[in-house]
Image (cartoon, rainbow, N blue to C red; front, side):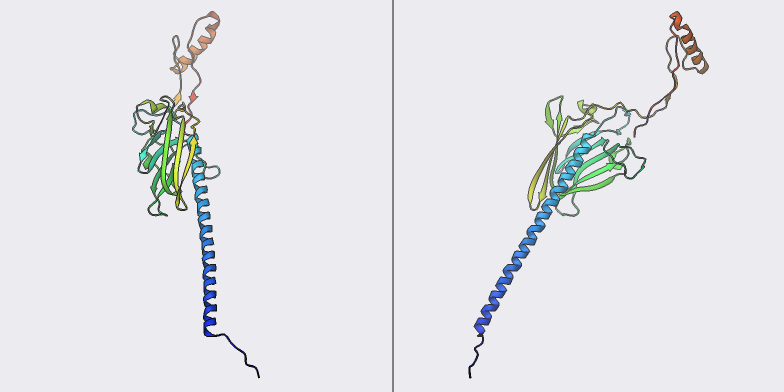
Length: 274
């Protein structure tokens, strides 16, 4: 009769130790792989979000404009371009023609007032977020009092810095204000340089871009103030109804005789610009 020999207690303990060690190594590998994948996805998402925000800023900046149809007696202008250093970067507000209607057949123009600035990031405490604020109407009031839609574009921002090229001085400056009385009151910068620093997966990534406002000179767009009903000149009474018509008829009859005469033109509608 033969007897079978089993495992000793030491052999069982050694086997269990090896199994536990291999399980720990396998778990650590899987955990590291998932962490690396999550970090890679976060970096890709943050990079894509930052690139989209820069593209949106460049589109807004390229369509920035000023209008000559401003009331010089009021404190706030409807169209403006103002940028100054504020906290961790530049705060800028400007009028632009980059607005897109919110729905089909919406009675909205392409003009709006846009603000870019840094605020506290509600999703990432201790960081800043790049905020875009859009007012869909242009009014001669404080831009902060206008109804507007606010969007959080990029989170975990360390720096949002803008530089403006002044062609008249041939230099880059860090501020611009068309509401002042200096030489910037009637023009936009020729170029705008953007520097955005974002925390991407634990390290700081620097993003750079450039914008060129296409409408550098102010547009001669005047708001509707009424109708031009008549014009008067020497030899005519254009502003007095029937006499203006008679004067115009006399002028036409006297053209063959070389005698000048007044003429009353048709009323001219001045378009309203929002």
